[in-house]
Length: 205
Image (cartoon, rainbow, N blue to C red; front, side, top):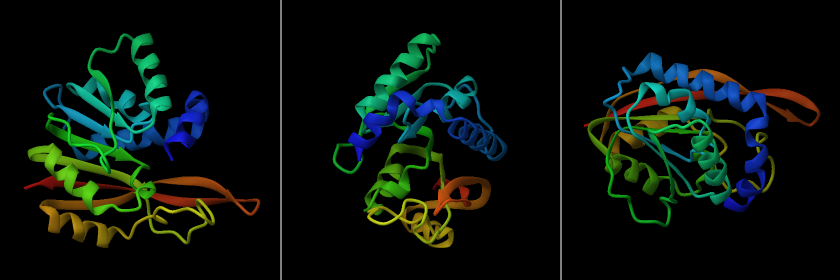
């Protein structure tokens, strides 16, 4: 999967829909959480950092983690070009790598989790990476019929939000809420189809 994203990294930001999606998700996060420059943050599955660039002026140090070296290379170029001082790229795959030493007040992820076949360990790692009372924000696809990625996709066809919330509660999250915040448009059999994207917010006990 990382090879796929490596190959697409250079042109990733050229898609205005991705830029708009990140902007909408950033605004939704702002409306749910009181962001401050004292908050440490981590974006998991950051890609080229579109979401973090939309939020970084309102946060303290941000670790941007991804398993794609190509995406992180583009991200590094963007950070240098913008003279951004509070964003640090990190090569990390929580499915195989040990947890980093840092702990965070806020952890957010956009359109990443549906690509991860075995999700439970990742959710448990998210809990471990957060400081007490830290906040998790998941923005991803609502449950769909598989037409978003099509045949052969080995991830999740979106998520049943009630089941995802129940699993997070079992892991040790509380104050869990979610809502649809955006429609991702994707062409299916020659027709543009909207796929709902939700934002789920949860707090570590």
